[in-house]
Image (cartoon, rainbow, N blue to C red):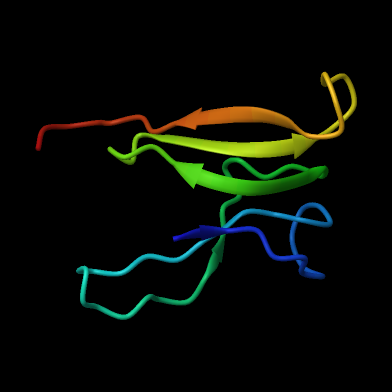
Length: 81
């Protein structure tokens, strides 16, 4: 599960957090700051692709096209299945 609460801890005023579980019926674990995609800017509105390999998120930073642009992060798969 990905979410972006307005917390006082993190890299920016709004960061993306992640919580995982072992199975569909399992309980979610404690949230962790998704530091590999967060920045000192506002990172928000995370969503993942159906296959879980791409994360889409908004990033409000200087040099973008508007107040919050859409960015992607791709999972690097290593090893064999």
